[in-house]
Image (cartoon, rainbow, N blue to C red; front, side):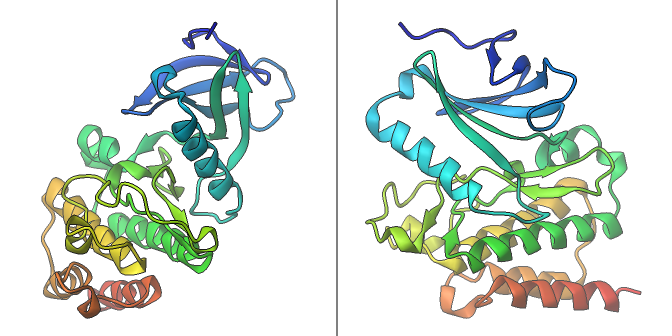
Length: 255
């Protein structure tokens, strides 16, 4: 019998406090250590695969997400501590941050200005460049998968549920999957993903941030976004590092 996961459920010395997010495949809870000296941090996030998704293929993907994430160690990538099977449920224990960027923009718009927004974008882009350097394509870059702290100082990429890694050499599944408005044209045509697919989505992320906040687009930023989101992937930035250098140059020229 599968035990229902809800507020008050205990796992690995942590008590689930409240639901902070839910999608089609999983839910994420804020959890607090029940011990004075926590196994990880006092507060962590616990991701649980929906019981209706516990068929073998979905469990395999859930485990793969955790394993890909656990390989990564970078200031701008969320830390994944452990994957656990308990009471016939599957869990991923990971670092907790206060908001995803979309929620923060919608609920605390007054916190943002063009200067700190660009710093957030560059930190997120630095994390994505690191992901690519490890042979991983994220494939679901968007505002909701960038987490930030209340202070805006900490910025981390999360959610590697659609990610793939070169060393697996597998046929890509669900090739058109992703978040509407961020999926590159080649993926919509059924073509495989590569680094430039993420670059397209990152360009769309920058565009969305500025649009949601009502900030003015400089001519330099418009050029960067157009290049990042060019319909022909061969016309985009070849690497995240090139896009980041352009953003940093644009930021310097603004002063």
